[in-house]
Image 1: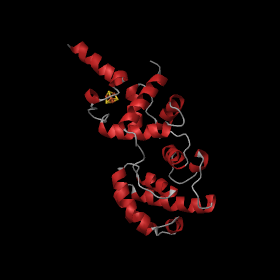
Image 2: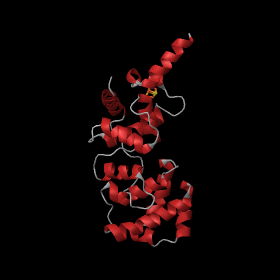
Image 3: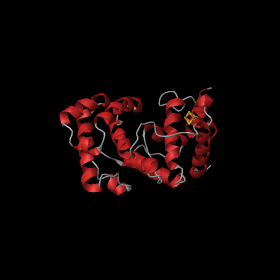
Image 4: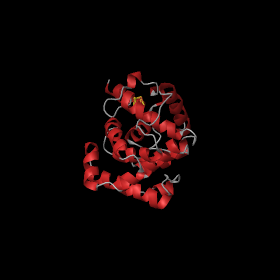
Length: 218
Ligand code: SF4
């Protein structure tokens, strides 16, 4: 089976499992998704959602973030960890959006990457979820699962992204990545993946290797 065929099968099975898959960060405005994604680095989406519920009420627009007292903002985002860097990013990003982009989130990878604390992962999230553009969000679940399926040998997010761009249809690549997140939490977990009940096992490279290793031991 070619990698493209495996990717197509994975997409089909994941779509059946998670027809509604979407980003699990709460937001109502485009920049709020970007801020939430920045806070989600090394933190769970559930915790970020608790923090942003109060945060977006306290700072209702970009101006209030740009003019926020940094020490106070740090305390506001502290539960998300790495709070000094994250607060600094949010304040700087708000200023950049106001000064460089007329208060709007830009819709190109190049421009998004000029924003404080924004890497390709968040930039891709914005392109896919807000602007409906082709995007591959290589988070830890996506990297692990596509590796196990044999779609990539790489572990580095930018390299995995490059590999997946060649294999996934552009119109559905963003949804595919959201589905891998749910799948990675439910079934293809980092430790002890539930291969026995996995509908992807019939074409999974990792599973085939496990079976063959068990057979050899017999
Ligand atoms: Fe993950 Fe196992 Fe399913 Fe392969 S068979 S995708 S390793 S849960």
